[in-house]
Length: 549
Ligand code: F6P
Figure 1 (cartoon, rainbow, N blue to C red):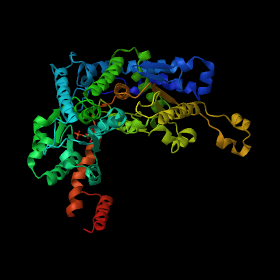
Figure 2: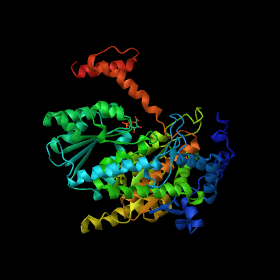
Figure 3: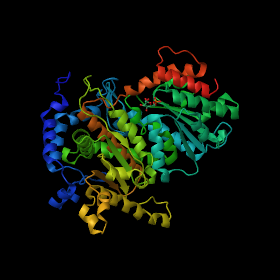
Figure 4: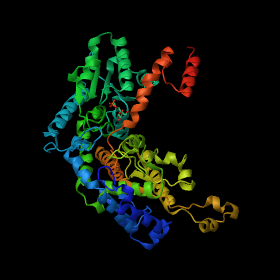
């Protein structure tokens, strides 16, 4: 029994039933599943919004899916979902509501936190962002010297960087190409240097994005950015025209020297990794314009509504979450690959890494007890075709089970010329070929049939049976991007709910921050830091020696 009175996950009859089912299924073969059910290729598919989701190439039967849904019922996934949408404080370790869904709620929706409807404030900020973005895009908002803003540099880290950077890349084809966008996150001075070295300070707007406005990397980079600006413009007053802040912390923003009139706020019920559709998306809104940004929010909302209302059998985030549980907990899979077949989604998996791993990388349950089941997987991947020539070998013939999501689009982006558009079929031929090869492989007899010498047959055999989800949409639009992100947000939610962990805190990142603060004086001044372990002491000494200190 859990401390909260809930039966331990791995003692629930639904869990035991799945373990038994897994044993009985044994080495189920995708070839056999497809041979037994000619309708599988269309039957095991779902749609949400513009997304066509094929889960036929998974090591599951109807019974598996039913048993997984029963586990979701037993773990009250939908109860927690409803509590989230209602604004209850389901982030218990921080005593906060979890309301990223309110960021894309319709203007007339009512969502209350502590008795107050938060939706009007969400739309008020969106309207202010739209006004500001419009003025930057039109040239009405100028820099301190009267020059037009041509460069926008977002300074932030984690959720205050990965989301806008990913979405800017994803929607590049929709951006104002006359503006330059850069994203600075790393406290390594090289990041800011490379982002600014060819920019004119008089034409550059810095967006300082930080939920807390205490994050050392961001505050340090923001301070250096201000110095860079003032060295050129030589007037403190310039800060007001070249710096805006995105934050929940007005006091710290003011302390830093940014006028709070130039601050776009969000709220503690928005987690950093769930925040790029809040004020944190200002750089993206400047890039694609307010209308496209709102289309993206509409896309998020389509999937929110689906997750909130669709029955379990057709609920796509539920399905994806449960399939992850199946492999993570009943097949011992350690990782999950996300492989987009779109160059524009080159940062999508890096974004998902934070979304998933910071949310579900926890070994303590909501009841404060250590879990004795596996929680979040290692999420990894890069655009697919590049991966094919790098790490796909291991997915095909390695010894590990790596479930993977393949994301592709029927149409190339509109602005490609005819010749480049023609390459799209080749890209997508690879997309379809890979999931086919992964699922069905190539038997020794098929290899022999090609006249391969016997000693090479084992090497050229593909066992197949590697599970994949295929997500296909017509085109990568702002709405489709919103749909994809919401899909993964809710997938992560489902898994956290099943594993009984708080997916919305991130205490695991704190210790490193505290230790970095403690070690810094040892590096800079050679200070004797009490309690430093022997390894770190020796490393610090070597570092100082290498730096000639
Ligand atoms: O250290 C992790 C973290 O707190 C993330 O959760 C967050 O997205 C990131 O740091 C940045 O935080 P902030 O937006 O407060 O600067």
